[in-house]
Image (cartoon, rainbow, N blue to C red; front, side):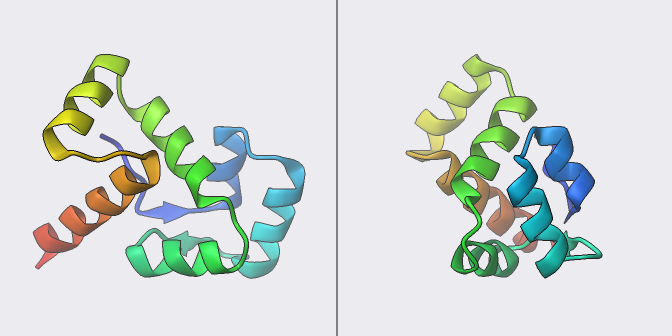
Length: 95
């Protein structure tokens, strides 16, 4: 699964984000932001729809069959849960 290390306005535009979200993102993160559990939580506190982001990322990264297998194997119930789990795994691998 291809999860970006960094999110920019272009990333959001390519995912189909609305104009308002892109403009808000430019204000908070003019240079983009590294995608981590902490930055995801901060974006959520700032009012960004991180659930939308996780859904778009999941659905563009995997086939439907792979999604079902992954969710069943890991007992993950939501795309946001999936993204958090993937970010935790990436952090563990980096150690």
